[in-house]
Length: 85
Image 1 (tube, rainbow, N blue to C red):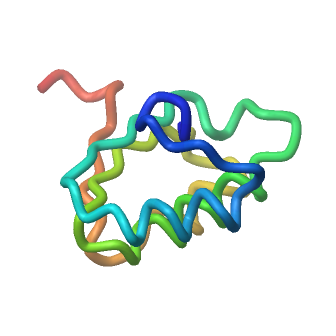
Image 2: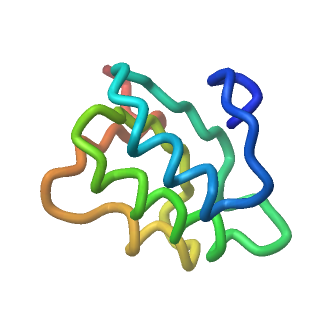
């Protein structure tokens, strides 16, 4: 993510600090978050990113996975892609 945003960082903490200091509006898309080897780590990062008012997140998770309830909370816009909409 840092590379795509033009930031040079050496870990999540430094990435978050630079992103917080850089107030440009940004949208981050994270597909298949539930499919990673350890999805809980990225889920924690998503929650931290969500606290930044200039960051917009689009995160894909499957219902029934451990990370889905963490991220599907009040204020999140949910779309069920299995629905015919």
